Length: 247
Image 1 (cartoon, one colour):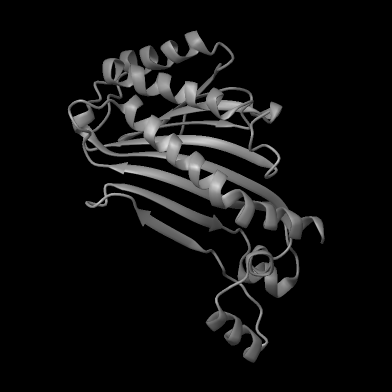
Image 2 (cartoon, one colour):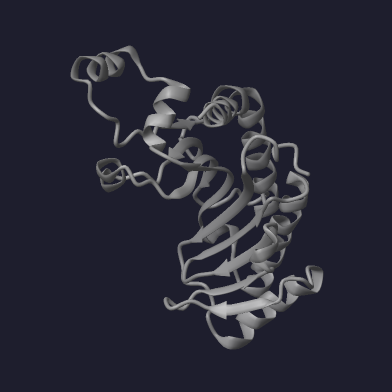
């Protein structure tokens, strides 16, 4: 199992390569691209087109552990849910980024942004926003507001984005996404849904001439791993898991 598998109910690693120009959409290029991926991962057999015209190739989702790749108008997306290791997921992403320049005519010059996301999902039936407040706390100013009004928290999705270079082209974002809304709070009927923690590293703009997409992925994966290991696992993921377990 992945070194992060015990930190949440589901763990996944996704990439998104956004381009400035439209990607090829004709039959030959699309099929050639996905056939090359399937050659390495024969279990990726489910191929279909979404209503918006996006093409998807994926493994069987019913197993709870699967790979997927999507080709959109200006985005190439890929992910692996519950990988056996983080390196296993990165192998898929390296392959996608290696073949895309040749089979989809994607140039590092055409890069709008390259994202790598480490995602952690907790399945929880209840007020996600209240859970975050209890597990992670808030600043003293917000605590005073809640204490003085006796109000119920209906939205609390902390996020922070950091620039890691002088021109702000390399960034990292930590965010928490809830699925609880005012209707759930008002009725007291909470569906069993996912509370998500995202660690996203992003490289903006065209790559330097001596760098490839795979090189950029290596830097982003190192950054995500460092942030999860040094801060997110102990100060966000484990407190959330403990708070859920106590309910």
